[in-house]
Structures are given as C-alpha cells and as structure tokens.
Length: 85
Image (cartoon, rainbow, N blue to C red):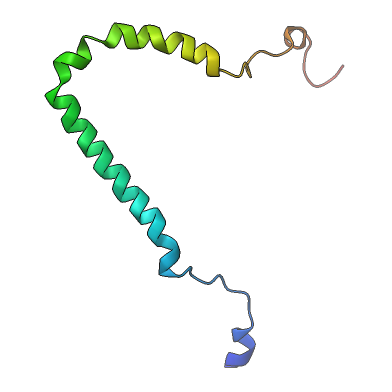
C-alpha cells in the first residue's frame, strides 16, 4: 500500500480541541442558566403566575412590532392556478 499517495488525499481534518471550547462553555452556561431559571420560577411561582395576563397583553404589540409580514403576499396569485398560465 502506498502511504504517500493516500497522504495527499483530501480528508477532512478534525478541528483542534481549542476550537470546541467556546461552544462547550456556551452550552455549559446555557445549562446553568436554565437550571437557575427553573429553580427561580419554582420558588417565586405565585408572583409570576399573577403577572401572566399582563405578559400576554405585552406580547401582542411585541409580536406586531417584530412580525415581518412575510405571510402577506399578493392575494390575486391565489385565484390563478399554478403551473400553466
């Protein structure tokens, strides 16, 4: 077997371990934040449950503000059959 011929072949190299560290730290921090959020909600559920109606009312204008209206197309295109014109 000719190792010199196989050495030049394009094989994907595994990234160094230092490239994976920031991703691992981010995942670890996200996990810790989720666990802390769970216990915070668990301890203060009575306070949070009382504000749900206000949060729901706040979500409506925020959805209208950040919605990009991508679903609104030309309504005439729905009446014409697709394919042949």
